[in-house]
Length: 354
Ligand SMILES: *[C@@H]1O[C@H](CO)[C@@H](O)[C@H](O)[C@H]1NC(C)=O
Ligand SMILES: *[C@@H]1O[C@H](CO)[C@@H](O)[C@H](O)[C@H]1NC(C)=O
Ligand SMILES: *[C@@H]1O[C@H](CO)[C@@H](O)[C@H](O)[C@H]1NC(C)=O
Ligand SMILES: *[C@@H]1O[C@H](CO)[C@@H](O)[C@H](O)[C@H]1NC(C)=O
Ligand SMILES: *[C@@H]1O[C@H](CO)[C@@H](O)[C@H](O)[C@H]1NC(C)=O
Ligand SMILES: *[C@@H]1O[C@H](CO)[C@@H](O)[C@H](O)[C@H]1NC(C)=O
Ligand SMILES: *[C@@H]1O[C@H](CO)[C@@H](O)[C@H](O)[C@H]1NC(C)=O
Image (cartoon, rainbow, N blue to C red; front, side, top):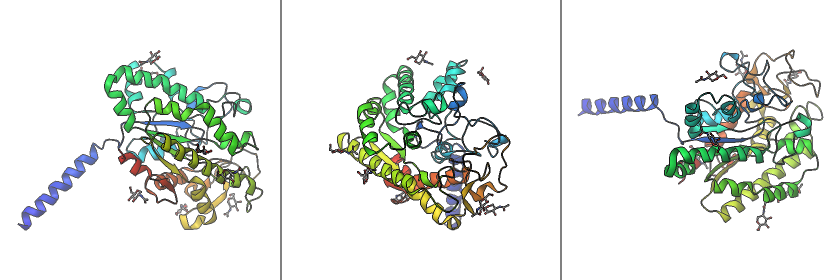
């Protein structure tokens, strides 16, 4: 009996091991929309944009130290979330597929597994970032790009397309640049803009059912906007927390109107504040200065910048973006955290929701 039981345990172990080897992603596809927090190289394919991270030392901790256009020392939030969903990293930028459309087969396969539309410097409002950076792809335009992809998916999959999209995750992180551009941007502007654009209704009509939304971090504590190393800009932080409350209201309203839509809303202000107030508890020694660049404000990370030695000890990679270590932590809280970090359900629950 004992022998038989241990044989069964061993077989079960082997089975799990072999299942693990061929692990399939938890969802059919991941479609990503947003700003530099999720951009994995979109802006690299926009020659005229000035919102770029496609030079060293960006990517210093990416496999082979590759410069990809990510606003990070390594992987970013899009990659970390994609990995938790069982993908190798974030799906590629839409523009990389369009501009390298030498292989239609590759394009077809990729659009079924996911695409990343996020563009650094972009915002909820179409005009956000356009003057400052010369050209960025706004959320509205990103959703138009998805509309094209959506038609391609229907052409390829015919009647099974809807079921696939229904189970896929639509990830969003955007809003910071609207505040940077328009300091007085307020709740009213956000809600009014979102109401007028009807982006959520478009998404719903394209078949999106599972929305994963990350709110903005406390902007007043970013190195660029801090008053000094020990003091955050309270006014900007108040706006950041209000934005979370507004997003929560919009999403609650959306599900009242369309009960078939499910969402996870990540409470980024809570997570970031907790981390910044108690950095040592979570393992960050330095949560005030950027790892890349000097302490002087407004001096961005550039090719000649000094880079800190221990990058896992720093919260900020540059003046506004977190390090890979922070992205990894934030993604794990979003995926499996409790209601303080993500509500009404976490991402792992969103994946399983029917
Ligand atoms: C498509 O072009 C890119 C460069 O533009 C190249 O890296 C890639 O290997 C090409 N793919 C095929 C299938 O030819
Ligand atoms: C995708 O759709 C667009 C227009 O809807 C079309 O021009 C393009 O050829 C399609 N691409 C593929 C690979 O089917
Ligand atoms: C934004 O809306 C939230 C909730 O409706 C409210 O608590 C907050 O005070 C508002 N903030 C501003 C700046 O209007
Ligand atoms: C939610 O819907 C109610 C009722 O239609 C409306 O008064 C409120 O402004 C909406 N809230 C948001 C954040 O859109
Ligand atoms: C963070 O790093 C900067 C630059 O290396 C340094 O000047 C500052 O004292 C550090 N802060 C803490 C709390 O260690
Ligand atoms: C780097 O920082 C992390 C987090 O503070 C720490 O655990 C690790 O030991 C440090 N590594 C080195 C080489 O100092
Ligand atoms: C979040 O996810 C984890 C792991 O997937 C689960 O055990 C947990 O109960 C979830 N929900 C909450 C509210 O913590």
